[in-house]
Image (tube, rainbow, N blue to C red):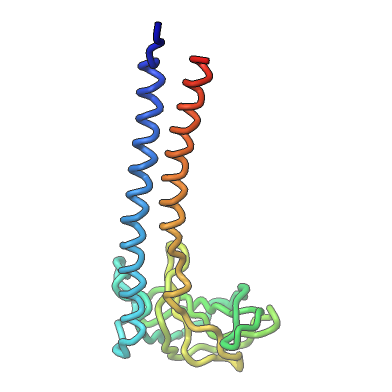
Length: 189
């Protein structure tokens, strides 16, 4: 007498495996999208034309492009950890500026070994637009306020680990199948 394979547990396991495979395939698609995005940002770095500031709400097309902000009033300067152009760890200083467009712009004005905020009265700053979180900021090409050059934005630094995520989902699917087959064998034995 042969025992039958339990239907409901088998359906549940197969549904989970199909979901994991679908997630792996989705991650492979995300990998291709991220590669295209990085290539677009690399092309933007080669473009020397400027985009206007203030930025429109859909600023994605301006990322890694050049822009100039006229920092009319410096509201404050905050240090965050960052790298110099030579790769040394230290502090990059972000000035919060009121600009001609009646808005506020965050401008990274340079690097130093000290977290102490430099004195800077503002002025026009040209640099590259990058995002951080839900916001954007301008990374100055030329350091301001006597600071040193900081590491310039590089699209190659953007994480693209979707292939690893896809591999994990495929591995999880295989593992679920193997465990289920072993459980069925043990049940029969």
